[in-house]
Image (cartoon, rainbow, N blue to C red; front, side, top):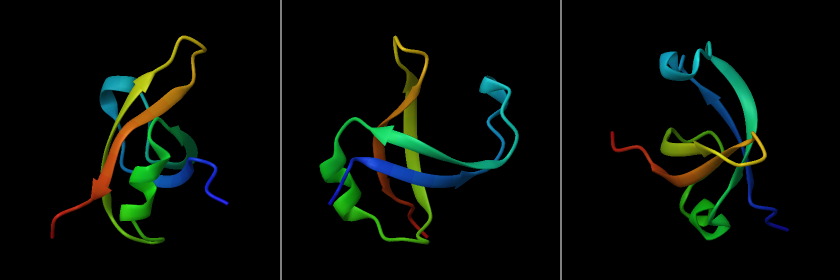
Length: 64
């Protein structure tokens, strides 16, 4: 079952003060997850929701 969550390992995100880490994110549009595969490099955008949690607003396979 697609819960709309994704586990990402990302590089540092200096604008958020985050070091490189692996974490789970909820996606705004879980249908986009059908375009990515486990272990695949992706590009993503996120926003901080009203609840303080970060939400993936766009995710797609990275172009090689």
